[in-house]
Length: 431
Image (cartoon, rainbow, N blue to C red; front, side, top):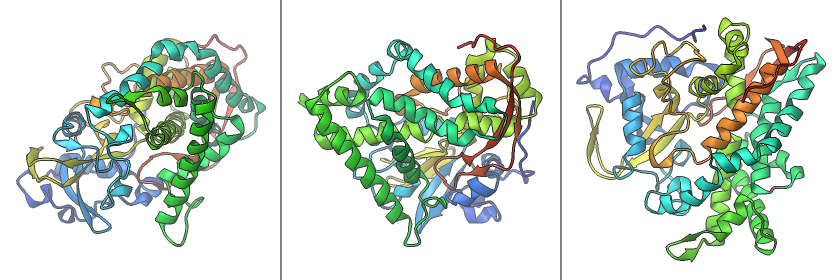
């Protein structure tokens, strides 16, 4: 077992007190939109305090107010109730006060029933059966990425894991392998424009525009090519789709390609990195590694534990009450997924990693109509990764300090050097 350190909470504040609605009254509690909270400090300490003292709290980013929601039950309601909390005005804090030009066109920024029409064909293409048909391809990617770990020297788990979802998405979308490295950089810059690798003195808009234009220009070329040379990949599927009796426009196909790649690249890779970063040298990791029968439940626990996507934004469509707090139509609401996944009212011993945890109704993939369309592919990929990792290696240890991603959107790592010992006898991996 391992417990994540976090600051001791102050006494709870009753819901009727001003601190229930005003972040300023919480004094030293950190700004949740500050990327430094995720790169240099412990956001779980802040989320724990907010769940106890002010679960629905008014915050501000760049002069734009928004409500922060930290308890599981409230997060669950916001994500399920699309009629009251819309996705079409933007789903990330970077878009606060700007609006989202993809609203109503891109699956992630569209509400039912249009969202359902966009989602269903992709969900069928990413379901269990077609995913299992590609199991051999995914396994080949995993074993190739893990091979250097056996050399005995430092192995940057973050750098290698970052290639994992891109390789899987590249196969599913039919993207040339020589483009994968550039696409990893562009998608990461889209969620971490202030990270030192991408930072621009002229502001984050320069970085975001560069990343978005690069990705959209790339998919413009891919869509043009796929119109002439269709295949069985996801881009070809989008080109064959119809909404309201008409095919998707080129802009809609490109926008959804961007969304699919972004969702895969910046999240899946962080699960093994964050899990090993916190659990190396603990009994919790050793027990899981020695129990092949716990791969499935352990991956769900790793998803709960790591929860790479920090937040989603929704906008209130009609006056309502959430967690005892009145919300007005037009206001922005931000739900914090890692906080919901450590909610003491839902998960017994939430700061303990338990590979056998059941039930485990984590929200790492969201919930409701926008539940991650690629969840099956992500889970299969992670099961393969951990199964191959544990069957081949043991004695995981840090080989130097890691470096966290400077982002309030993705809670993860850019560097994580580790070492491991090859098992004297390779076990059969349990998927």
